[in-house]
Length: 114
Image (cartoon, rainbow, N blue to C red; front, side, top):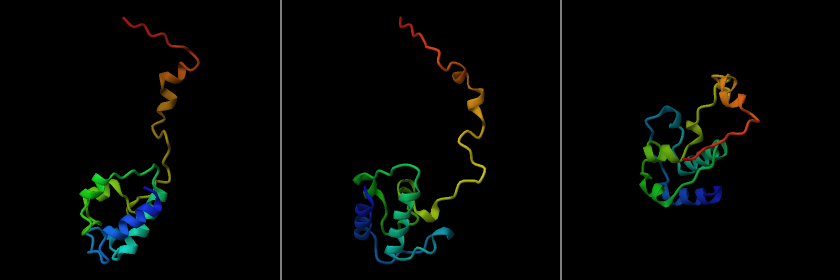
């Protein structure tokens, strides 16, 4: 689902006014366009592609999308994305240094199938 398709779907699925969320970080989203802007912003921040099937979209309670657990699992909102910790590393436990696989670099493996 590209940005334009997502915007079109949400503009048809969402009510004009959204009820309050139980989460403080979503309290500022009160109108349909606020939700759409936040969802589109989240797709730009997401570290991977987001694929939504019609079935998943049909399971979301669009009358209460801010607190819906299925929406939260499949369609993030930028307001709900927590920034990475400043000391985050790809290999924070430094397992690559201790990996036996790195010692075998350049060595061919022989597989014997019985």
